[in-house]
Structure formats: C-alpha cells, structure tokens
Length: 253
Length: 323
Ligand SMILES: Nc1ncnc2c1ncn2[C@@H]1O[C@H](COP(=O)(O)OP(=O)(O)OP(=O)(O)O)[C@@H](O)[C@H]1O
Ligand SMILES: [Mg+2]
Image (cartoon, rainbow over all chains, first blue to last red):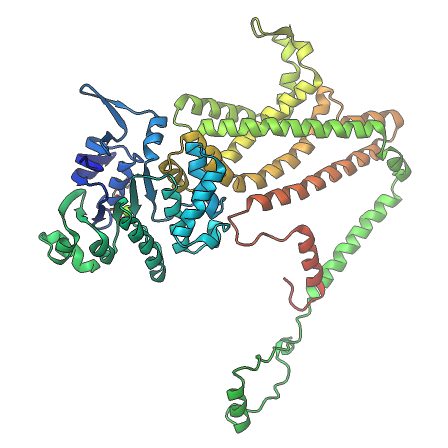
C-alpha cells in the first residue's frame, strides 16, 4: 500500500531562515494524522508544502505516489507548469485557520465554485452536491447567507464543505478551530470526526489534544523544524519520551 | 442650558418607600418607563442655515440683475447643435472610460506580474500618461501626422495619418490612454486590497492564476475600485471639454460656436453648464447604486439610498435627536 503522503528529508527556507530542517514522515490512507508543536515550529509551512503553496528546497515529498511540484524523468527533476500544479491540488482539500471563504459569494456559491470552475461540472450537479454537503455540516438553512452573515464556526464548516466539494483524497487542516470562540469549536470538531469515520485521510494541525487523542491515528510532535517524537496519540500524549515534548504538553494540556 | 437636559420632573417616590418596593416586584412584566427628555434645540443649525440662504439669495439676485439674457439661455438649451454636442461629449466620455477600464486592468495586472519586462512596460506607460497633461497628450495625437505621414501595419493596413487621426480618434486616444494610466493605479490598489488568503484558498481548490484573478480577486477588488472609478468618470466628463482643442465638436465646443456667432457667449456657457450638471448628477446617482451592489457580502446591511438619506436629514432639522 503506497503512503498517501510521504516526506523524506524535506527542507524549506525563506531566504536565510531555515524553517523545515529535514522532515521524514508517512501518512497512510484513511489515517487521521495530527501535527502538534509550538508556534513557529513550521507546522503550517509543512502543510503548505504538501499542496505546493510553498516549494520545498531539498528532499522528496510525494502525495499518493506523485511528487509534489516536480516530474521525475530519469534522474532529473522538472518543475511542473502552473496548470499541472493546479491539477494536483484538486485532489487535496485545505482548510485554513482564518476560513478564507469568498466573501462575495453565498455559502452555497462558495461550495459550488470549484467544481463548476475547475472541473467544468454542470451547475445543477454542483448545486445538488453543494446542498448535500451543507446539509452534512449542519448548515442547510444557511445556504443563501454571505460569509459576513455567518458565525466563525459556521464559516469554518462552510469552508470544510467547500474543500469536500472537490472530492479530495486528502484533507489538510491548519488549526481549523483556533480562531473560534470555545463554544463554537465543538461543531467543527464534530464535522471532522464524521469525516474521519468515513475514512478520509486527514492531516490536522491542532492544539485540541482531546481531538487528537480521541480521533487521531498518529501524532507527530514538531519543534524548530524537525520531528521530535512520533507515535500513537494516546501514547505520546500520556507518556512523552522527549523533554521538549513534555515541556510543550505541560503547557497545553 | 443644562437644565434642558434634565429628565421630566421625577414623580416616583424615593427608593426605599414601601410603594416603590411593591412596584419593583410587579415591574418584572411591566415595560420600563420611557425617558421623557426635552429635546436639544439645534440653534446652530438654524443660524447657519439662515446665513447660507441669505448668501445664496444675494448671488442669485446678482445674476438676475446682471446682463445675462435668461431667455436666450432658455432658447438654446434644447438647440439641436447643443444636444448633438452633448451626445458627442457623452459618447467620447463613455468610450474613453471603456478604453481606460480595459487598459487599467491590463496594466495593473502587468504591473503586479512576476515578469519584470511586463512590469517595467506598465510602469513606463503609467509614468508617461500620468506625468504629462492630458491637454498636451491631445495635441500630441493631433499632430502625429507631422512626424508619421502614414499608418503602415505592413500588409494588413496602410493609410495616411491625417485620414486616421480624425478629431474623434484623437479625442478617443487622448482621453482613453490618459484614463488608462489612472485606472491602472486604481485597479492595482484594488487588487492589492484583497487578502492573500483569498488567492491561497482559490489555488488550494485547484484554480489556476487567471481563474483566481477573474473569479475571486477582481470581484472583491471592485469594492475598492468602484468609488474612485465613479469619480474618474465624472472627472472625465468634464475633462472631455478639452477635446475642443482638437476640433472635436463636443458640448463645450458647440456652445462656444453658437455663442461667438450669436454674441451670447455667457448665455451659451451657462447652457453648457446646465447640461454638464445634468450629466454629472445622473452619473453620481448611478455610481451610488453601483457601489451598493459591490458592497454585497462585505456589509451586513447596505447603506441608505439617497432618498432615505434626504428623509433622515429633513427629520434631523426638526427632530429631537439628529442622526
Ligand atoms: N513567507 C515567509 N517568509 C519568511 N518567513 C516565514 C514565512 N512564512 C513563515 N515564516 C516563518 O517560518 C516559521 C514557521 O512558520 P509556521 O507558520 O510554519 O509556524 P507554525 O508552526 O504553523 O506556527 P503557529 O502555530 O503559530 O501557526 C516562523 O518563524 C515564520 O516566521
Ligand atoms: Mg500555523
């Protein structure tokens, strides 16, 4: 079985700032893979590398057996064209900390946009799926609302529906609940739990240790651009081996 | 005047009297007592209103007494030549604005592109057309025949410059290219006002660059682009009077032509002013509704229409609390 995501010695720098310093990890299909670590450790950067919003400087990164951002021919790497990169991204859904819904479109239009514009799907088909997805995230009655007329939790659930509309095989979540009021976090986590039960492969950057312990299949603790500790979430969270993990967990738990 | 702010004389008994206690327990369902305050008198508004009206009256009186033949103004206001001139003013303004908009978007995108060559070309265009007076630019186009005798596009097209550069073409190129430079800066500011997260979200959904620009960035940039564009258009309507210099017979030129032959220069200029005011007023209203449309999604409630505002203002002169 090929890994859904495979990283081997991934490095990323911004100019002189070395952010990712050799990340090795593997995410199996249908796995819920949690990424935790202190602020600035490079979690978002790594997530953004996976769908090529950022380009890696060294190492190999592949999604579902395909290299991210490059084509390999013989022993040479060729950069992909913009259109090819865009095509790869269709299979990867991403949910952002600050939702990033399109404010000039209603919730329904947000969800319909990519299937119609990217896949050239018929509007009626896209609309039917969008309605089904909004219903699934519990927002069937908000389909006509603009994002500014939705609460943060509702916006994030629309954002999840929007990503699902492309029927991705991998979902990336970058702290999906950390911009939300505490009482709104539960609704979003419930939707994610449902996705996990349906067998979606998910990489989740989160500070919600409860979610990681309950839903996660694997957990990686990152610090300063390296993987410090990896394993089963329940083991790592209850019995961390490294001092840095212990120090971090003592602060967030 | 502070006494005027006082509440109406309190008639309820002191807090701790038995009656008050009884009232407090029943007050759970009773509606709260409405404040009955004596309204603030807006003396300042009345005084300034009177002064302004008096000044205005003086001005009107002066013109009424002056040597202006008002009946002549009336005679020429619907003159065919005036209406024709107005039509051409409108035509040249709308077409120039259309050219300006297209060029503006193209050059704004070029300036923001990663390609240094397109970026430099856009910069050069904006630098030249914004940095020289539109009057000079019109004259440049007008006199192009002095330096190029022919327009020669190889096998496709060849003609004498003087035949190509009709007054209409000169006016259109002069105003349109000038407007494009200003619009490019407005569009650029609009594009840059859109949050980067929007582009990222669109890319993450698999949209390519041009789809992202057309479907996600530009519609949001419109909110920032529309208000100054409305101003630009109204400016353009008036700046278009400069095309008289390249012998395009617009509203101003038509008024001048009639004025100088019928010895009613001032009267015809007033006629022109009336029509400019009519045009700018109509487009100001249009601009307002356009802005309202592009505010969609960014505001929870839309701003009031002019009519709603007028009503609110009328009320504020007389009502206790001005809005
Ligand atoms: N475009 C950029 N240019 C320069 N430095 C950047 C850029 N993006 C991120 N960084 C730096 O990379 C480091 C890692 O950032 P990243 O966003 O990946 O951290 P994170 O682990 O997601 O933190 P947080 O929990 O706060 O979101 C930070 O020090 C940040 O300043
Ligand atoms: Mg982050």
